[in-house]
Amino acid sequence: MTKSLVEMAAAIVQAQSASKSMSTDELTFSLQSTYKALQDLQNDELRSSADGTGGEGNSPAPAILPEKSIQKNKIICLECGQEFRMLSPKHLRSHGLTGREYRTKYGFSLRQPLCAKSLSDRRKKAGKARGLPDNLKKAIAKRKKSPDEAAPKKVAVRKKKKS
Image (cartoon, rainbow, N blue to C red):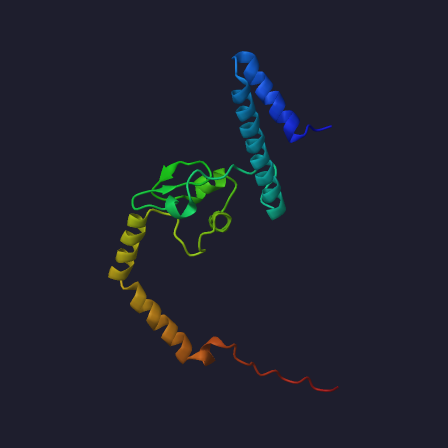
């Protein structure tokens, strides 16, 4: 049978008081703060299991906000806290995630690049220098202009002769 929060808090405070002498006020304060901490943990656990995000095998909450993890010269992995210039698919696989799953889990847009802002800007400039936006516009216009070519053509079928 599991212990109640009060019993767990009392056991923790009792273990603390056994190692050092505590006054009555210190015991009361320690018991209250321990109970509150246990209650917060239980509420977080219940909330995460109700969301369907809790359970075994999940990593703890990230130490940094997802919005703050993508910085000018680095990106911080929210799973392990390591810093990179780009979160590679190989690194994400080590956490059992794909890029799409990582973005969804932490609330990023599916189009958000998982790299440092400076690297993303450099790639954007290089693409514009190669003329990618103009080429894309031309390709889209060409598709819209000739929809007949995109549709499959009808093939004449001969009828069988009756014998």
